[in-house]
Image (cartoon, rainbow, N blue to C red):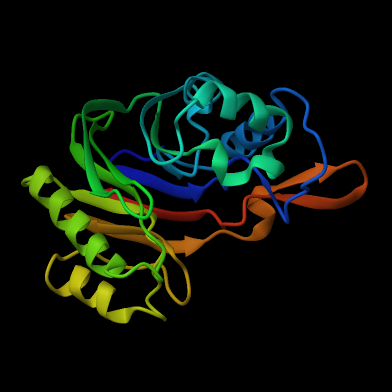
Length: 259
């Protein structure tokens, strides 16, 4: 950890699944949690934004990663105990019907001082923005907004992202802000969304190209711009066979300096 700097990481966990899914393979209890935890332990981050994270994993992830955390459930969380029991054994069979959550975790030394939730939309799926006010080891504060936005085919989804960013800035007041997560929009396909966010709200830079996972910043100095990590960052050994990929999303990392 470098004083005055914050290492940021965002990752959509694909509901704790492999890519490609192994639909007819049963999992051992706790197997997928252990695999994802192992990857997250070896990656460098101070602040971690997770989407499509199994809600039942939250306390275990905090313990496994020695981290503080906040969590808000998103969609499909009725009868959570039953969904979780099925997902524990057949995660690729139940897929997104397990239910999801956004989770923000912080390494030891960092603390979560305040948590708020903004409901971006209820239809066709409930989308929640998890907003936290964090305190760094040196005492500086930064706000972090963690969003899994609607897919681009949903009418008005781009406007929902901009609206969420405005809410996050309003709540941040004069604090630096990280607005990130799986925004389901890319600068290559929806440049106007990111033009609005940058020009009107001052949040930048976007992960380039067709990336939909982002770590946009305001009030922070970008030391290492957001970038996709290689597939090897989320790979696990597979008994002499080619490595297995966790999630269908790449991890996106960035480093910022707190002014």
